[in-house]
Every structure is written in C-alpha cells, then in structure tokens.
Length: 266
Image 1: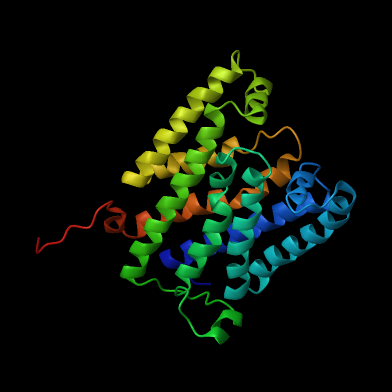
Image 2: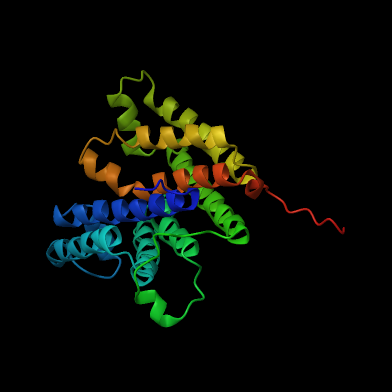
C-alpha cells in the first residue's frame, strides 16, 4: 500500500474530523443531554417534545458522520457546514455567551475546508452527489486559500475557548478545580489569556512548532470534561482537525503561511 501524500493527509484529517464532530454531537442527542432543551426552546419547542426529538436529531447526526467515513460526498459535507453553523448559533440565541459560537468554529470550518480541498464550491451539481476523490491533489493557489481559511477557523476556536476561560465559564472552572488547582478561577483567566495570544499568533503567522503545541494542548485539554468525557472529546474533532490540517498544510508548503501577499510590482 502506497504512503499517503501530503495533500491526502490534509484531506483524510479533515474527513475524520468531520465524522468525529457529528458522531459525537449525535451521541448527545441519543442520550438526551438536558441542555439541548434550551436550544429547542429557541424555536418554541417544549421540554417533552424536545426529549422526543433529540434521539431523532442525534441519529441523523451520527448517520451523517458515518457517511463521511464510508462514502464521503460533497452534498453531505455542505449540509454539515450549514448544520454546524445552525447548532453553534443556538447557543448565543438561547442566552449563552457569543464565545460559545465562535469556539465551535471547527464544527463548520472542517467540512467547509474539506470542500475546498475537494475542488471548491463551484462545481457541477451532479458532482455534489458523487464520492469524494481520495487521490486528491491541491493546487498551490488553492492551498493558500485553504491555509487562510484554516488560520481564521483556528483563530476563532482558540479565541472563543480563551474568551470562555477568561470570563470564568463554570464548566471550565470546575475542570480546573477537579484537576487540583488551588485557584481555579485565576487558572481559567491565565489559560484564557494564553489561548487568545495563541489565536492571534496563528492569525498573524502560524509557525509550525506553535501549531503543534496547540494541537497537543487542544487534544489534551478536551479530555477533562466531568460528564460524558468520551463523547465531549469526540465531538470536538472539528477543532483538532482544523488545527492538525493547518499544521500539515504549513509543513506541505511553508510559503503558504504568509500573512500578507507582497505585490512585486508595487
């Protein structure tokens, strides 16, 4: 079996990330996570109906995620971009901080960049329903666009998580308390500042080593949720995928990371 090319590594990373995100999200529908009632309430749906609908929504999410593993198509990836934005939007619409939306940029960012890896959005309609090309090759011009998008989504998800830390989100403070930190609120603020600094650094210029540190940090830090740890970790696959794909893309072509394009005729 031949080794994967650099472009294929980016493609398979994003594809797995999308699958993880929606399988993990769907699992919460199956187990009827209580907080989902708040999101159904945005549409005027009461608790009883919400608990009835959750397993249906969860099952659809899981099937969409599995389809990306077994028979990935652009139409499903496109739907997951829309669905990822919609579900992330429910959080601020239900009264949660706006940071909860941008912290989930990986949920819709991963499938969007996956579409760019597969040739972009301007393709014939019939191509949307065909299986994605596993033997993908990314043109240099497209790689620059992909890196730019990955930088933005990475900035959003890190800045969003940093923001939630800085405002001392209860769930995060509880994590630090459970880990034994003497002053979990102060710890949350320090982590928040560091994550925001990392987010800005990535947006300016994503150095390979910095991205790798953030990949490890993100994968490790999402392991400490007090409830449903496995599902929480899996659901955040979009975040890991965006970071890891950016790292792979920068390794693939360091010239694509420039923050600004210099016009040689200027």
